[in-house]
Image (cartoon, rainbow over all chains, first blue to last red):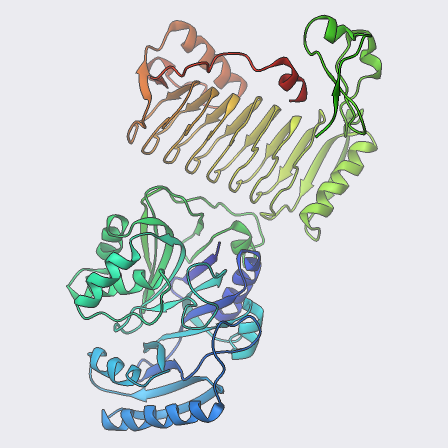
Length: 314
Length: 284
């Protein structure tokens, strides 16, 4: 059992970091092994923001093996040298935790595949997100703990999705935590509640087409599946509709891009989702209490039906 | 497991053949005896006055605290209670075995009014998954929408949603009536065993899948039929019952019930209609 939440403000920005923290914290009883945020902040859109990790959180509850911080330093050095090699200029650098970094990068090529492959060829390095608005932050612990650790409370933006995880299919570590970046597409992220039963078949087929998987978490398949559809020219909504038959199992998932937010629910409607929709705000979560954390007044909400796909623009 | 023994002195119920054993040890066994009606009580219930009314604001309470306070108010004889600010909390109003007028000014989360027996409830909002699960008797009216597993495993009572409901409505239901003013999701009536479901709007795929018995009435379009679900003739008696039910439910009063579809189980299960052993019935 996991919890997912998402919101999109239409026509304005808001303190989405704080809002999503409240929604995910309300769902912490659904799992607090790890919590992840995909926040779409207000930026000038000139530079890429790259969130990446050079190691794992090996704190209490982690299934990762401890490494010396000097290993992280070494990996960071190699990342910096590869960026220089590829003509990417670091505009701003923040080392939030020994294993977690945020770079603002000036990089003029549109295709991020080669870029990502080069960076992730360094053992132990994973790009959590790459985009001009998207920032994926995920770590062990509940929503409040992760929010405090990464100072997300004041982040202003238009939309966001997040995930409170109870680990079932894979270990308790950052690489298995949601959201997943829609590698190698800029600004695409996914969160999922459920279980995919044709994960390995799909994974083998997608890897043969050159797509990359960083974890053994079945949810990562959704991000890769949608990315592959979009690489072949499908729109986000078309890819999501195809996923209803292409993915087997039970699922409710959210996907976000630079300017949109979508949801899809499997054909058996086995996983919960409550939705609130108005002219200026859409908020949704695994349980109504997530929505109530930002809208305490009486509102009209509903459960989307089986096999439903919806996409909203900012 | 409790011990069983034969007794020579028979209660009236035993004399009528309703049961033949008594439990011994610490287990308390009570059987209804019309001669002792005054002394017979339902554990956890109170004498309440419907004209005695109060409000309960649960905004800053946990579900357990709110339910405990509800119980406390019933013990003081309050027969009409208005719950303010439920704000989507889970498990509110569960296990009420009283006659009671209960009004929720807002929405409930999961398992609202679950395992209840007797209260008349109005929810001026939405309800989450598994609303009124295992309802035994009474009436629960939801003014807005409902989540999945609405009325799961109910045994009796009327459960009414004026909006739309999610998937698996009436799953495993064993009696009672569920009435939906709007649409219903996939697998409605999944494995239902007895009772009736009325849907005025459309219904999703696999309607009545693996149903044993019971009846489903649909006013709109059906996504698809589930295994074992088949059409049946809508009789005049059915139409009269539907009109009466919709009138009592204050829903779809002008709805043309003569155009509704009637769906029943197409497969007869062996031994299904045999009555349960009397001892088991007593336990229920």
